Amino acid sequence: MAGEKGNLNTSKTSTFIKGLHKDSDPAFIQEGMWTYARNAVNNTIEGDVGAISNEASNALCATAGATIPNAFSFRYIIGAIHMFSDKWIVFTASHASAVEILPRVSEIGLFEEASCTYRPIVQDACLGFSKSHLISGAAREKEDCSWQVYWADGLNPDRYLNVGDPKTWPSLDYVWLGGGPGSTTVNFYSNGNGTNILWPGVEWNQICTDSSNTSQTEPGVWPIGHPVDGCITCISINTLNCEKIRLARLMNTPCLNLRLGEGSGSLENGSYYAVIAYTIKGEKVSDYFAASNVQPVYTLNSVQGSLQLEVEADTENFDEFQLVLVANINENTVARVIGYYSTNTRNIFIDQYKPSFESIDITLIPLMTPVFEKSDQIAQLNTYLLRVGPTSKIDFIF
Image: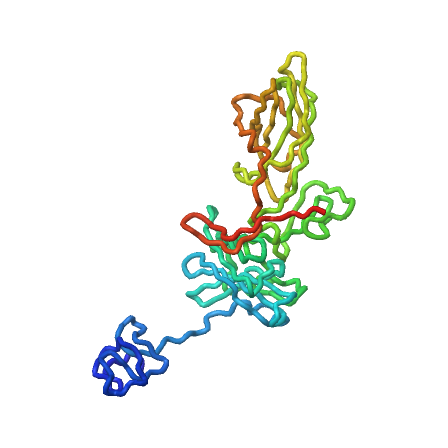
């Protein structure tokens, strides 16, 4: 019957445009009607309208979540985000029972429509996907040609995942070595020559070793009492660093200690305190943190003072920070940017405070911006990423 045109039962027309009428007496059948058809549509796969044709069928292209251990037998595709061309990022939630209870495993994979292939990218329970919380999001290409995907499910913190440059993705010939819970081969791909690789671009947990050949007991944790010595080298392990891919970054509050400098400088007599804000490529991405102690400066000649700032900043989540020095001189309070420094910097010597330094509105120093940890939905609007129904983080103090 596919693509057939012409009379059907008592119809007198060669075009079928008025629909199916099974109960009418043949005498009342009008042009464009038909009285019976199974698995049919009034168009063809070529796009012809007004013809009776078999409805197109579906074919299994790929299976997401097939590599999740059999213990997690209930698998649900809870979202997909288009990247480019035929490339999609697919999110799968897996539960150990039909009732949504722990334990559960979550998977993010790459689906390529043209070749009908699906490859897992990462499989980790820390993602916390659930069949009752669908995922929405968007993807974009970064300046280094890698692709980054952003998503929200209203249950877990909003997150992003860099899936690397398509040119560096594991070949279709590589074999996924995912195993059951506790397996040491989860998230690895094998090229068949005994070499295992992880998907590039992803923020994997790392185990570091110092120059004394002492290694961390777990990611970020050194043996108790061990002084970290010399050069540190780190290797990625096959578990996802879920905390590092949060949109609302976790960060350590810096510790600042301001004191008089041992040398001379050109600071005027007055009172000073310092604040810092974390930055990424020179752009401020955090509020100004708790101020240092207030340090008075007094010299006989008024402009010979100096200061030294001791800093303990978050070196794990940020690479740089902006230092602002607030001065109260002759009952006039001003805030100026001293500079941008690596978070590895421990001591900063301040010997000048010029009017030419960038000025900061003093009212911005104490402001606290709400931290939106999760959203109900993430959507793309032109070049903007919109977070719908954001929920701010609440701190409970007992």
